[in-house]
Image 1 (cartoon, helix red, strand yellow):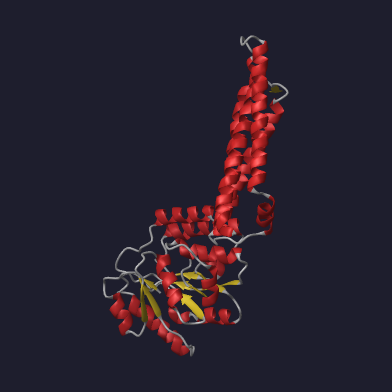
Image 2 (tube, rainbow, N blue to C red):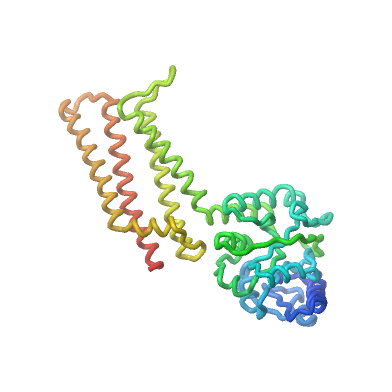
Length: 377
């Protein structure tokens, strides 16, 4: 149990945990990962027979990291120390773990068989925050979990250590579920009852701040949806529009599209390319930091793409763009540097400048990818 000033509720949690240990004849211990309590929580825990792990680094995830590392059991049941979870009812978790599950999540919502007691969950969390954010997690990562935020969960200790979880704040719980899903772990859910917590102070959770942190985590952990998909859409749309306008103006009904539209399309193409590059950077960084594991497509990409290849491709675009720009200057020279039809000149200048920018981006992106990849070799 992570703990930060939980003196009013900690005794009930510890007593329920020991009751389950004795009732189910478990060889177990109760570990309190204390995050700097000043209200006597540490003394209470020791008096009731729990083992206290003092955690200097602040944060929900930091406390759980330390508690997991210090635990001596094969299986770990984790849960908040606010008496909202019934630690005397952990038998289904133990049974699923003994049957081979690597992560067993509690589900508080009726849709998954759970029960939320009156006053146990604010309406904005029950009907808006949790369903929306859990739905986002299920969509982005194809996770089977129907309650991403349930704090009562069980897992194999060696499996959890092997996940190499990195976050130290409230994102820890999300990282565990997300990474378990990405790693194709055996995940199961059991229905539980959520009780009204017994705290005499406001919870550590801050709804809007932590909601945004959840969205941020999901997006950063899913570069495909944050960068790659929007980038490809923008790149293709901008490129198609530029290509359509290269031969001359395009008319759709009474509307005419010319080089001004081409300029906007070139901007869209460049933005899309930049997002695609960000997607590659983020993916490689996540793999290097062991947040994600390499997949076949990523492995194939990095086996084909090299610094030298990137420099060659970028140089080709750069030289091609410069040549086209010089050709436009040449045509202007033939006109004695006088009047030059705007539509004709921009049909050369816009593609030329776009190619130059793409070339420079590709060259420097290749160098940056090589720097990121140094840690992988």
